[in-house]
Image (cartoon, rainbow over all chains, first blue to last red; front, side):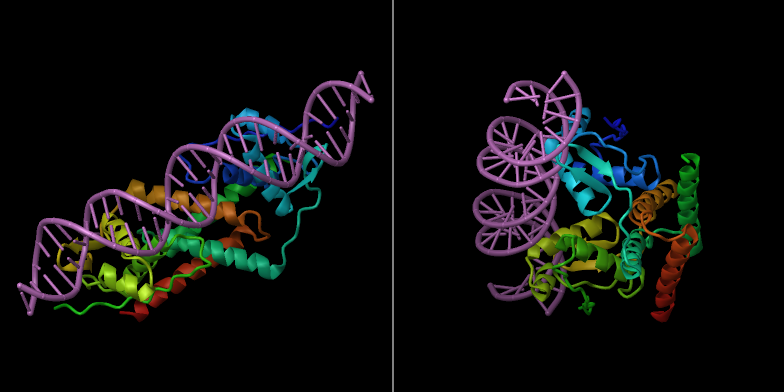
Length: 138
Length: 138
DNA sequence: AAGGTGTACTATGTGTGCTAGTACAGTAAT
DNA sequence: ATTACTGTACTAGCACACATAGTACACCTT
């Protein structure tokens, strides 16, 4: 019996994102930052649903998307686990995703009174802060 | 009779954003970049609706939001115009919006194999490119 | 008076998100 | 084998956002 890794998700009612997307983002984040180690067993769909007081179908929907993303691996009768090998995107796909995300980001911040350098510096600082937390978890 | 400034919007069916939001983003972008000059008269709700082959209510919804944002000014019986003075947000509100947009952005790109410096540089380049286009329109 | 303008309604259809309930197949422990 | 837990796949219903369609009204210019 593998020990189940706890997940510290908090569903925010004020969040504009749907519940299943909040779960997807948070689990993906915890796996990326190493908070959920590779191969770890995640809570069952019914267990996490009870913990978050939401419906099991909503959790299943999040797990399905994470499985399609290559982040989780599910085995019937056993449970869902964090993938050992993270699926690799091609270089072109990576660039596409960066470009797309940047376009959305710029569309949000271009109306503000910040210089490009200020925005860039802020992004760098936030990203470095995230990397720093990764090292803390090693 | 003020000449109506044409708007080169293309509604993308593949875009995940609702139609009225695509209109809001595009008009706001064109005003920010100076493509739509301050005080310019925009197409009527029925005119733009016919141009985009969408419903007039959808255009009206976009115009209403832009008016609430302080980007447009509407006068009954006359039309809608680009505001002469762009509404100013407080410093705290600006910081909040930057932080929020950055959080969404990082959530999208943290899973990619780019270094913080690479991402930051790309954002800076894209922002500078936008500023450059502004100068071209002066 | 006529026509174009923004605005405000109501009604209808469609899709998404979420909940609820049920059912089934696979796995492990007893 | 039985039991209990796992993921998965349905159906049904409800709420909400989006978009369309139609109508109506007040405003302004010509």
